[in-house]
Image (tube, rainbow, N blue to C red; front, side):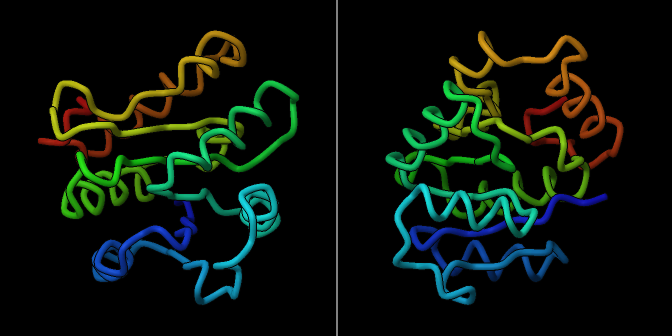
Length: 158
């Protein structure tokens, strides 16, 4: 099952349009009427809808980390730095994640892309990696499924 994405109000329209052009299921906070919600309520909404939140808002990571520490479930957050990760890279990486991943791979996790360096690729938050990684290693399984899909060529994920 593909990962359905939810774009917060800080995501440029070009990313949403690019993903739609590639057949990715997305919903924006503007379309959903949630563009003025605080971070906690926004994560509640995305979880209610069964979508993974994509953001370029660093402050939203604080809410996700708080939930990880307190054991409050959420469907996952994908973060890309506003200045260091291009729109094209966001579209490319999110398409791979959405089409090759499974929603449970991102449950209660934060994935982030902090630069354009292909050797950095998507990284799991330090707190999540050390404190909440399940023994069956869902992140490893996720990356293997991406590699096996053939979509990862050139994305630094193989």
